[in-house]
Length: 224
Image 1 (spheres, one colour):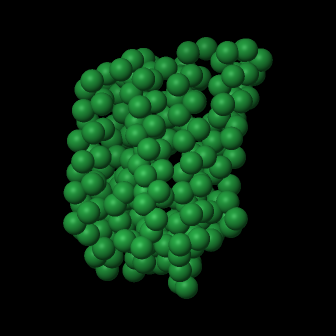
Image 2 (cartoon, rainbow, N blue to C red):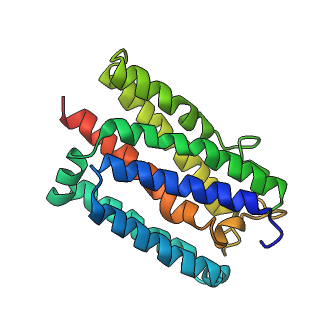
Image 3 (spheres, one colour):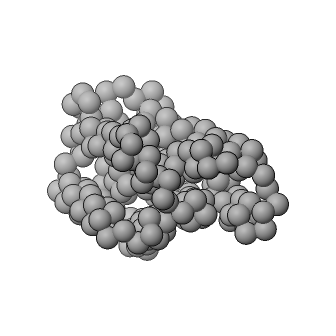
């Protein structure tokens, strides 16, 4: 990965920090949330730089094991009284705007494909349409919350569609990675996410994006 241009890593790092900063603002600038996110990012930095995820033959793969941590955190937040209270106090407008980060993420993925570290099917030139979520996010934000011209149902449907787009690329990314159960892209596996800073994508950005959708859906359904 040393052969990759530095600007790709810088762009991705800035995108990750943007996602964290928007979520931090959505939490009413909770220092506790910021500390948790920074500590988690530091852990992933150490693991990525030390090549911890390069061991891909174990079951479950090391990367999948650490992805499970934020997944479990999301499950706890959406199912426990404390978590539901936390969700209900988040700023849904900023949660919606957070999805704009999916635009630079898709640009980074395309650059990684050009430099042969992920397969084409993981980009908007292949089977990944997640950039549509990023492009539409400011539209939903403006017309749904600022202008109030989109009703609750439209915003709900948008969130569900975007979750579907997210799951689509996540599934393709998992099946393209050089794990024992790899099913796709044997000519060019998805290896970028095994390295720093791109391991931040499955361990930080994707969980934040997914949780933002779940939190928004809960608020739209509960706060009628």
